[in-house]
Image (tube, rainbow, N blue to C red; front, side, top):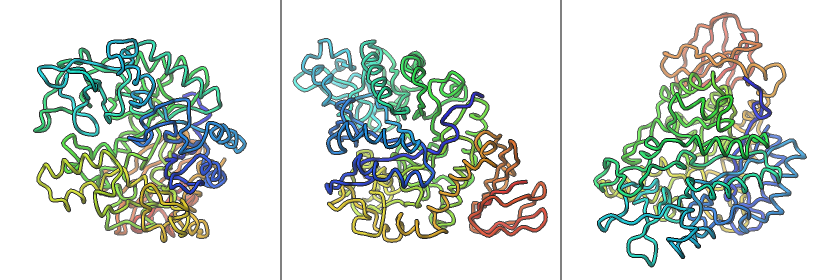
Length: 556
């Protein structure tokens, strides 16, 4: 496999609205990111992915873009972005932007012109259809609930397609003119010096036609079906993705990571192979294993064995082909420590365990802001405090299903995207040091206990441990093995044990006791060295006594 510039790096995702506010208006900004570059460098970060900061009405927190060329004034200016790119380069760091091109905002000039004349030139930039027998053109349900079709104001029977929020009309990728506009924009940003993109909701680009009357079997009593069905029914997305790669990414040697869900084994080489559409893609297998099309109330709890088995399967399928990007959380997920560690087991030691399991797998690790200090889910006391549009929809669905308000709130507490979007906890000062104003989303009350400032002073903190893991990946003695070495499961049938080899120039064994109870493990050979551990390893010859949630990395 050809080695690429990004494979030995560690990446970090910033949700700018919640990272650091320098203006006192309760909203994070680009100058806040610039001010924390040295913090990130000290953590061991090389690549920074910034969630959308373009001009937007923020109906879906920036994933509804009104102008792809302009930074939203709430986040700063285009000059601030130029400075961020420049300051990152001084530190040998790379900036990724979020590429959101399945849809734009209904406040984008293209859409304004389209609805002004639904039969005109710009109408072909989107998907407009006539209704059928007084109803929407088909029975698809949007990702955020309700129909994917919204009637165009001022018309009797004309609708536009939006797989997400009604303020996020889908772009018509079948139109070559749309694609040319997108490629022009991508190359404009790459020419400015960004290193690449995280690519949002990319499998939705290709639609099935004719849209009018293309119904799927209903999966709820509302008579609608999830629009995810379209992803499996649509054919030919590779034409779009291959063209985008060849026209934009390849000439710039850009790094790209795709938000790819539910891919088949056969598709993996197409997405991230030697000539894949993207450099890498995220591993959502463990998170998706809990998903239910019926609703959050029907979702499973991811057990320790499920998490381990999902990670191992991804490694098996991906490693012969390319590099996966590993995550335990992002802006669309609950906090990983709450999702993958049983509630009764949550502790600093367990958080370090999970960090070890992610960072030692083969692939490019993405750390989400706050993950490095073990930030946790917030407890929602009332639905009125919720910002996330998907949470509001799922709460209403729970009530329709007969759950009480208290039960519905408990259900959405597990999955709300607000869990990961609460402000970054920098200190135990007011508002966690995030803002001197009123934060746009409530700060997690546990900020007095979990924050960067206190953990930077503590050599045994979660933050200090993440620094050690990042440093280990770059240690010349082990880098070749950890980054490029084979991933081989060890004792994969053992209940609540997550253990694997990394084999290359050296043989490394990563042992993780995924439970509170101690256990003894027979080692395959003598231990040369304990490389890193979140405990005091208890070794005796070829045996090791693992304490609860111990994660120990051994050289054999």
